[in-house]
Image 1 (spheres, rainbow, N blue to C red):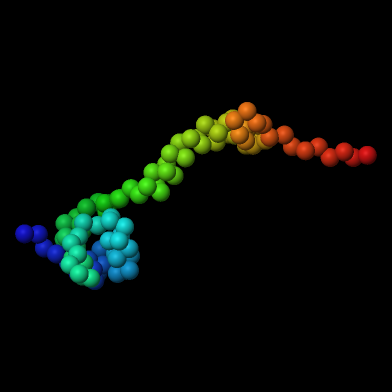
Image 2: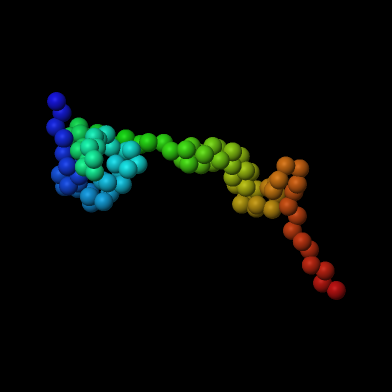
Length: 102
């Protein structure tokens, strides 16, 4: 059976603050067992190069939106950062208002 560590033991060995460890536990980024209010973290978590990363729905939506926006960002770079030529909505182009100087 694998050794289990308390939050404080894990935090000390991983050189983290116990609150950071608790946050990672709540987010599902560390493999652990919970009985009642007490967390026990599997010692093997210390050997992992990167803690487990739980992808949340919010993160996946952000990634989808970032992929959708990538062509727009590229277009702005192709236009030397000029964002006025970028379409603001399907079929709608932004045109800066021109002040009449009369």
